[in-house]
Amino acid sequence: MRIALVLVSAALATSVIFAQSGPSVAELKNVQSNVLIGDANGITSAINGQKIPGNVSVTTTDGASVDVVFNNGCTVSLKPSQSLNVNAGSSCEALIASVQPVVPSTALGASGAGGAGAAGLSGTTLALLGGAGLAGALYANCHRRASPSSICR
Picture 1: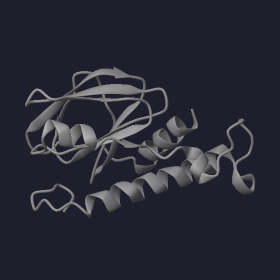
Picture 2 (picture 1 turned 90 degrees about the vertical axis):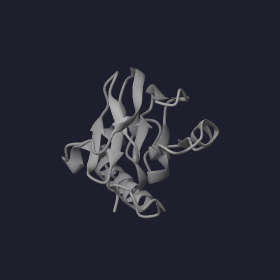
Picture 3 (picture 1 turned 180 degrees about the vertical axis):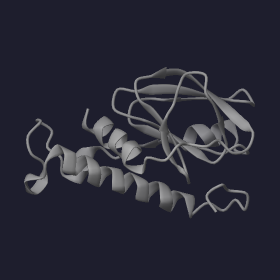
């Protein structure tokens, strides 16, 4: 639940509208709960049937799931608290292997029993810190890409 709060707060904190750029390379199917799409412009909530371009990340929150169905027929299923960088030219095996776990909010110092987090920080403060951390991670991820056509540049 806290990871959802952190990611939702990150999406709200950026207050940037996701703008698709380039042709779609995949479609989101079976979207359950809160699935997020991020690129260099920000983060937004995904909807079932949404077409997505390459060079974005798809992230599931706690309790969420989604199937990313690529135009080449490959399907990558994300379980709760997982992330996938959508790279159009990758093989199906490489896409499946690139699924990464999302760091739980307890790594940020949140308590697991609904109490105060590390150093007595409130849930709201931890959510904002988590949002900043997620934004930083997305930024860092964008700037380590080798593709010259990356929308991150």
